[in-house]
Length: 205
Image (cartoon, rainbow, N blue to C red):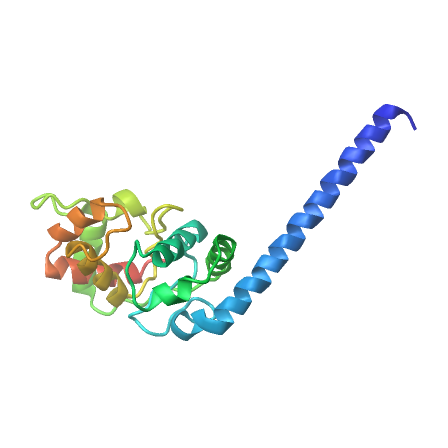
């Protein structure tokens, strides 16, 4: 075997070893995430990120980067929560990232619609905003189906109560760790629009 073939074989072997190492690290991260979720997260968010209580967010399908950022903000105190700060304080950045990947891989279905007329108001608000008050559409940032981006949260299928609570916190400036645009958006929502759009968001998938 000549030198060229030896080099090619060596590179291939290194690539294979690197791939095996990455897969082993991913499995270790997954195992660590499952350990953390089963030890603490499941109490409020469920093992599958489904969250049985409407006051706690559904994490299933949420962007992993967004989850990791929120955990970091809870840890630093940038996002205030007496419940989440102690849960996040001992987490490392790697564990936060692993938890994000764990929940992003989970699936949870939409909530069935209950009030067709209220849903229509929510759909209009989500898709078109309110030109008379200067309210932008939710879809302009979070997408037409509420799927968001790694920087902006997935809203689709979220508990209506949780959505309403967060909008109220943005309006009162209790929540300041995310895009400041949300302060303006929340301040322009009427009580009806806030309730209706939260109900509509829950039906998205």
